[in-house]
Length: 513
Image 1 (tube, helix red, strand yellow):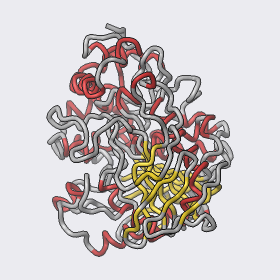
Image 2: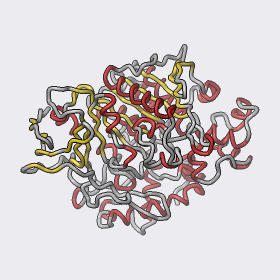
Image 3: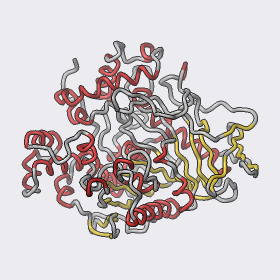
Image 4: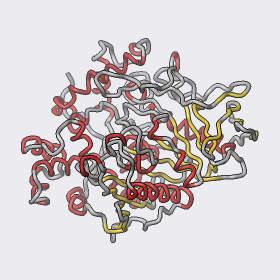
């Protein structure tokens, strides 16, 4: 491990393994932005595993976030992140620290953003980590990783899971350099939401990530991991959208922004290809971690049950009404009829649609649709990850967020992504502008937000978030609401429906075309 030196100044300077960086003092913290942890993945490094950043002479100003990786915003054909820096130095980290004192040895929390594996940027305002660092007296690191085709598509001649390999490279950077920023490399917690939580689950199962972190928080783990066959077929379909083959040779000369267009073109066609891509088709994202047998040997649930990462403490949970966000964004909130509900139940429900109708006899078609979508995509993958970790000899703490988003009188419920502004305290940024309707947060929202940060940072410090570890006898979880309580897992009906279900890599179910 490299132990960097440190220079005290008005604008503090930390000497990393690659060179010296100068940060800024902001609101009682020192913040460093846009530090390269790997070389820009362009030119001969395109589609390759990340390469250690080249060292530099002198002092680099670490004042601005690095440019986001090429990505699909999913809005009217737009690409990229408006207002963000431009350039190809996508692989950067940012650090918030109470003081860059090498003797401090504070807990370190490393954030991995979500975004369906096709978008995300550590410089997004919603991921401003100042409140977490200040309230918890911890060092917070956020990182960029490749998304979309650059990071996750199957490309012949390229390693699988390049976005995950980026995350591992960033965690190696943390091990090598975080002491100079006041952090303790032996107390690193990775935390992420949605695709970020799926990344956390993957890291727990990846041999290359072993020893790089001690604790993990996974918020709304998606159950979508691809088999090699499905990934290969989707990769071919993506490349075909730009008239090319899915090879490094064919795609390397295509500009990253043009490659993003392949995903934009394929995404709206996916729901019509259930016969070919099965459960992956309606997710409208052709990207996910691939259980490739090398970097990711088996799916996270199988890996944890066999004892992988049994020494890593885990917090994992989900939101009660995850799918309502996607229904609202599609303009279908509360409007799902029998035909669409039946199709979802047939595609996703263990035991078929009758099992859900029997278990929830008074539920409307709309409610059954929302329940099975939430259960399949986030709820049960999250719970099963905890149970797999227990089976493998690990310890897990489980939570469920039940506090509803304030917009439209609570119509969205405790929907997907609501936990992000609550954790970061960023109520006027990114998705929070929809969930909180631009209004100032209420006192109960502020109290719950503070509770999130207190629990997450306590876990990073001690391994105890403040509620009992989960077990399969009492099944106690933290229910996060106006008055947080510890209670038996609230979704017991769903749990029983999914008991014994195996979250295996999603297969290719139909013939290739």
